[in-house]
Length: 134
Figure 1 (cartoon, rainbow, N blue to C red):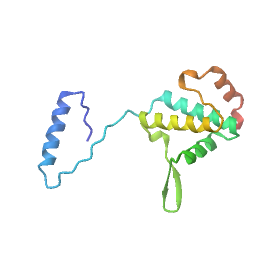
Figure 2: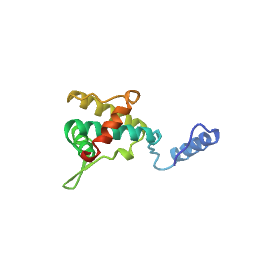
Figure 3: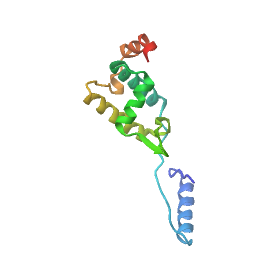
Figure 4: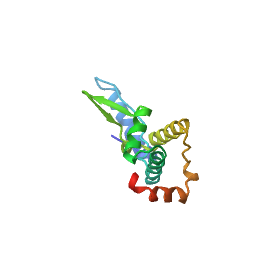
């Protein structure tokens, strides 16, 4: 159950729930902070970075996503198959971490990827002009 602790009533409900659990036969809880889902602007920015990376290294956007996720270890195995973690399931904090790792990895491979405030219309124009290759 989720409790928004910015509301007094929810804090009271959570504390009552914790008291009830601690008095039970199996007083074990798992608590985690829930971050906001990724934002549309984060999503757009990430796709811009994948496109720029793909253009530089001769990949489609999907190939760039695959290559970067493998390089950064964003994979998991199930049975005999390898799957890629989905950035769409990441919250804002997780996606920021992924983006920073991606920018660092890209830089180590000779391509500087811009920060969000450094994105220019020229970059979007470059992607649009080369859309057929992405």
